[in-house]
Image (cartoon, rainbow over all chains, first blue to last red; front, top):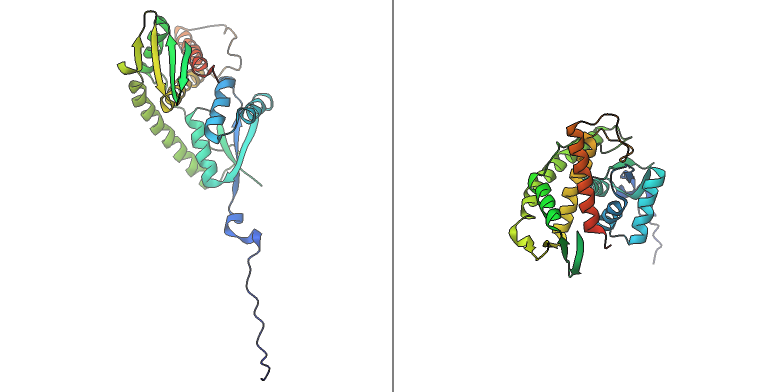
Length: 100
Length: 152
């Protein structure tokens, strides 16, 4: 059987970091401190929206209280926007900031 | 205001006569303040961020309208049962969340009207009748929020 030299074709494999998902911008959802929202209320809202246990919710609440803000989650635009809407519905000052 | 029982997503609270009257008054007259525009980002200056901010403020305005309707549902006669001393208020899970959102809207809205003071307990040099009214609203809303959440 004659040997046929075929051109070697390598499959084009996109590197992991080149996928569309990875190129999509991500955002930090941040809750900012204010003197009016009660600590017990902020903890409750975090539990309700993120499904966190009380310990984690209180940790973030204390971070807001003591450091002026807490980064709650890092998400793609759509989900970050969803969380900001949810937090703002409860009258917490929440924003989404581009993650670099 | 005191939690009597919580079972299978239903909360029952005992309210004294005057507490029930005040809470119903707050819900009946909600909202007390105009809605303030909010920012979706402190750093993002892109067009997309401005679009998101517009959408957020539209959504919050719609949410406020919905809360106004739901506030009236919360004072339906079947929600309150008269007892020998006071009232028994029964709330399902979502009704409790709605009540919390309404109360905090009153609290935060009043704080905005008062000029967003850092120290909520400080006595301002001059206090108008309007300021007193909003300070009372803020305190009352906080009182009932604590009542709803103290058991957690």
